[in-house]
Image (cartoon, helix red, strand yellow):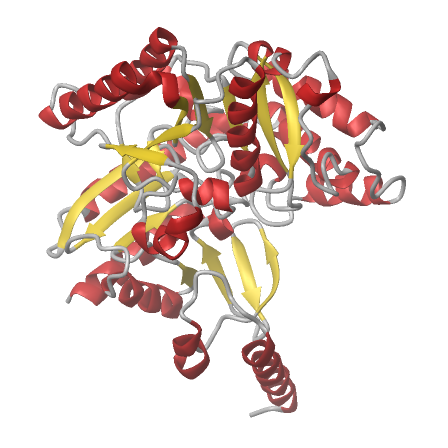
Length: 444
């Protein structure tokens, strides 16, 4: 081992020592991590790759939990951060404003689904959903209907980590430890089948209609991940369900909340997944791609009807907020993200990449041991065996992919890709090849 290699090894060992002694990792069985895991130690990132302290590169196949929609360290975002940092890093939004927050709000409303006219800023996807839940509850309270306190979500739903957002969760392993303190949420069947004519769609339509018909006077909102339920295993469903839900919410005067934290910013092919259904929600939650992986910032968009319920006497106001609400750094980056989407034609350029993902995953669906393949936009997913969330097969694929130069964190036995929309065509081909090789090796 050369002197340089020895120095790298020493540095890496020291980082891992400190990490395992002091850091508590998210979504990680820590005993196994401490005893068995040799972690990636990332030093820098660029585009669709990150680089470890040894200098080896890895494709970031999942966009680092779906946030790096435009790739890592996009030069325009780095420049925007630097310009803003030189002028104003932080100011509260309590009785104060600044150009970034004001103009970002205007730009978001300009491209949002029709009717969403107000923007409330927060920190991340969980808090964007938390804001939506509190807005819904207080709106009904302010309108004199405080009995409307229950929520409706899909089986297998995942909407975040706060107590409110976790209340919507349909992934039992996430929800169970907190069951006694959660808001009341009724879970309805996710549409199942390959087409809206399948029986699984009819059952889902009927279940939602029956629930709203019988209990709308106690329901505050229906909350949906549009078209793709990400964390539960990339479950995908047809846009007809969103249209059905919108019509039912209109009929029974129930709010519709659409959680675009994962699906927004082009992940499903259009800017917002609900666009593909031709519907507009009453509240829409944005995060992840919102700031291109550069800064923790999010927003909840609301209709005028929701906003107006908070006008009038001081006690009707929405007394809620975060220290970094509307932060100038995050606002500057979020505005630059929107500019990049416009000026670099991100959505149009992603279309052939999405088609390539679809073709590749359809072919991988024929690999022995793969039970189901699917794709939508810049997402491709495979179920291995039964597709269990705590299954081990996906992690075998992860290990194979890591050896081949890709970070392919699975959802249990669901292996998926959600790469940056800007990944180069040749890099996408290499990544898809690694996925196929890794799946075949793990299932051999």
